[in-house]
Image (cartoon, rainbow over all chains, first blue to last red; front, side):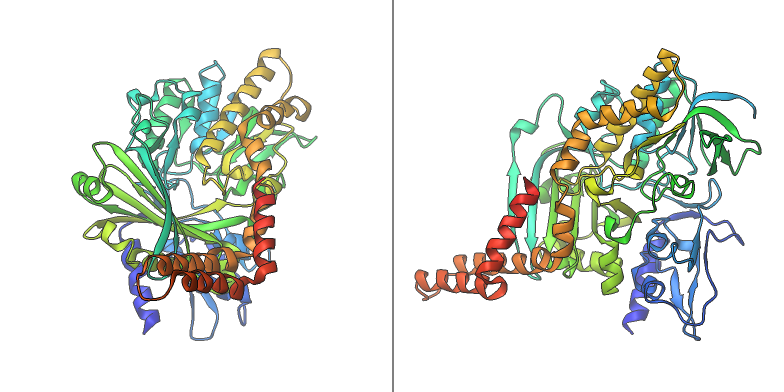
Length: 99
Length: 434
């Protein structure tokens, strides 16, 4: 129940933001895995846009549409190769109205 | 494109704009590349603008820059779950003809700054992500590749002002990716309210502004800080904690922010506001010891990308714009002498930076990050709670004799931290501050 409430709240927050989504070209990819490392699993809570979620098989998946490009997941999981992080193409991604 | 530039600046934030403006206004042929749709669209800050550092770049910025409020009051709160105990300074002296600090909204401010950069003669190309630095056979940086223009774009020097999460310099091996212990993740919301409501809630007159910074149980034992800044018709409210602490505790940043907003000391200040944006950004927190190599053959790095942020004083944009300006000035000097943009000559940037407040301030607090990060529970939970209890004990009038109240307060401090712990915390803090 608390998870559902949290999801709703983050989605509501992200709804205020402006994005130009580069459909079919996600700028972050999660390496296929059996079970996530501690750090990769932490992203399901720590990502401020809640882009990372656990699927039914217990693996971490990403939907990067709401990503604010902060780089937290990159700092935690790029070095181990668990995620691949690139900037969106020029002009795509989050566009802050106020910043 | 086979055109060659004197300098390419990567990024249109505070550091990049300062560098591009400094070089273009002194006649250099400058190309600035920004991946956002417009300058500022990828940038996030609290945000406070420091006049002194901008005056050194654009002296008459007050004529047309989009400024929100000038600051006349600062509050620092130590919070527990139901209370805050604070320090507060307000002065009419801050109502001066050339105010010292302003709140700004970055997306608007950066557009203005970028217009100045273009007026100074630089070419600014937005919606262009730089994918790679180009090097010659000797490893000297000679330009960049982008996702928009096929060929390499050449320049004598590349100024990396790509921000805290800059991919370019780290991929090129010019510096390391920040560690989870050296960056904080901050989330922030923009809450809109009528101007007069903000005036009333904070006791402000026209254009006066107030800052609140808060630490305590709101960060749930993590090393972190919350903030609330008054803009003209909005309030910027946010909270940030170390990424390593977030990962260890599995706390969610939006839960922390919601909790801070609901705190009885905060909720009345933002009541009935309309939220129009939610943003997240990393803040460099590693201090002096996390500063990377700042220059090399054909390149310099500035601002957040170089970890130039004073976490103790929450100053970053002024360090960014000063490092950008000094990099620009150094490059102009090397160019004027007709010397090549090699490591030995670009060391001038570092020596300028060393002489400025930027490095002097960061060196002063070089031991502070380690102290606060390894003792986060004491500094961010235990002491705020103890202080709040002490204050309440002092103020609540009952039939307890005052001497017993004082004994109870002293006993509470000793029970939590021990005599030795209290002395050792004080000594270590004093040494780190020194």
